[in-house]
Length: 288
Image (tube, rainbow, N blue to C red; front, side, top):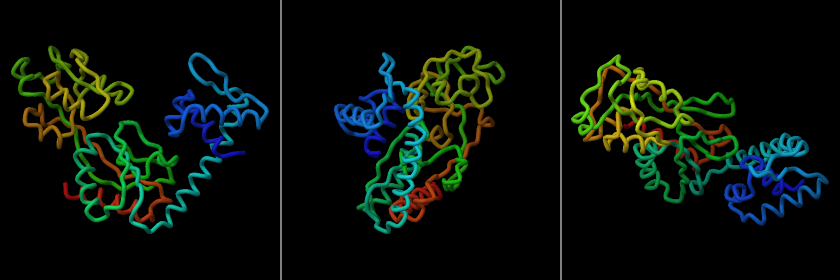
């Protein structure tokens, strides 16, 4: 089976459209369509049903997914193992983190890295979605959840905390909230439920049942901006909230701790450029 056709099949199966698969693989949509047709012809069966909602795998397509994913795993493993023998301090390293982590720690780390190793090119993805390191969506990731996969190496970076914050302008207008009132008479800004479900119930242990939700956001940077703009009370990392000149921390005795982890695949642990990026991140967290 042609691996190029097989990986296109997987991309269609995962995103549900030819256009989405083309964007993911960075090829044109016509090529995706031709490759799928060639694969279906070689196998003598239809792999997808074309529906208004997108491409849905047929029973034959569902059977093919399991086998082709094994091919993908073997191909990814081979590539990682080959990278693991690479001692060159040049080339691409893919890094994934949230936008707040990237701004406050990764950017300083990458400045140091660039001075030492200017031929390493970092491809940075900022998102609250967890990148799949096993499928090489990232070579390194900074996460707030420690992975359980035995194929991944994790190093503890730092223990941080989140607290409650509001802008000075907001407090001048609505006053200081009272603990135990479920933030009655107050506005809050929270993450979208799909990203952080627990925030729709409480912030730093205080119910928000009586509060008015003025905005739901999808990133830490937008949460900070919304709180800073006076749109409501929000839960922010204390190292970010405390640095906000227009922000006031509410109820300092209330906080929620969390840990940060640096994660990489064990096959990449000896790749020189990956180690250089990891070391720069670790060094910057130790200094912060």
